[in-house]
Image (tube, rainbow, N blue to C red; front, side, top):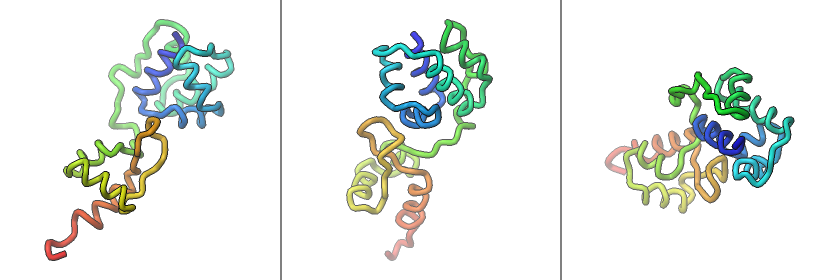
Length: 148
């Protein structure tokens, strides 16, 4: 039960498992096992995760703990202000949508090394691109003069 709520809150806040684990000072597999219900979290681990989530979402710690440990809702998350949260990485699909180009063009730029992707904090196996890298690519390759 705690794991499912932890996953829901983490996803609604837009934070990856590894990043949450790093902020809470626990291992990534610990967060994964807790979310999957393969492991029950100790009070200390749940408290650390709750504190990290509260900081990321700018929420009250007691509200986050109440949400994780009981069936109460977190009032400050309804609706969650997703645009106020800093988005630092985009998937290839999201990057293509933001730039208004086909997905294959972004994939090709990554393959050729024109765009330098990051191995994390995206989902396992996903290529993620930092916003700074995407802006650099757009300036250098998409806003080039037509004679180029």
